[in-house]
Image 1 (tube, rainbow, N blue to C red):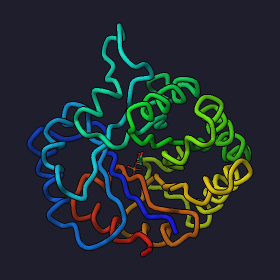
Image 2: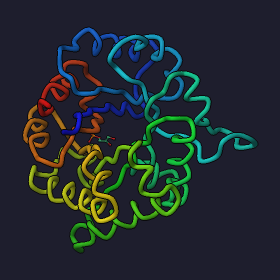
Image 3: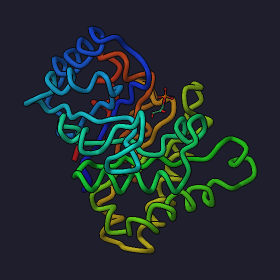
Image 4: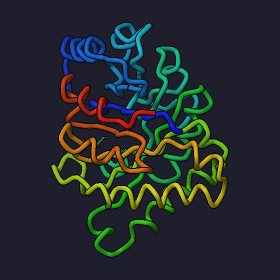
Length: 251
Ligand code: 13P
């Protein structure tokens, strides 16, 4: 059985003080769940939050990671810098990075590889736009996003990675995929991996993201191929984030 995992993506929100208070609030409310829990915070908050989470069950991650190891890449943050501050996860290829900041399948694959070079677990985000869904392209779009990473990193690399299915039309819109819609895509993703390597597919954590909230998380997480969530807006409040975390399947 796969361990459940819930990751908060704070996006570009919070002050130094509010970020620390939110992390402390999450830690204070942690119960006895054996699911894993992480927060991906803005880069500037990583030093503070790494101290807050130190020695707790709450893991730390970044929202992006450079596609190169070091050098003249103004404005970038490398995998080794993130590792030095105890980041265990890095989001790669979030749709907001793909659509607003020019991330391509090739740069996403390079970021994925850089994360693994430093033993950071890449959380590869994939998902279709509304237009692509309406044109019945969902599976093709996701296959292409996965192929690009496998071509560079190989399928075995997914024994140390997480995949997050985030339908672009559900992100920040309040429109969640139904339990069945999400399960259909998660099952497709698992089969995609199973066709290449059954053991990798069986162990791979596939998270759902897109307007996941305390009132819909339980239904989504009950689906057989949904192993947890990547949570945006609802992760900015400790109580709702913990409710979502406590909705994961018991293993
Ligand atoms: P929301 O939960 O705000 O829809 O965001 C989802 C997301 O993009 C997480 O990475």
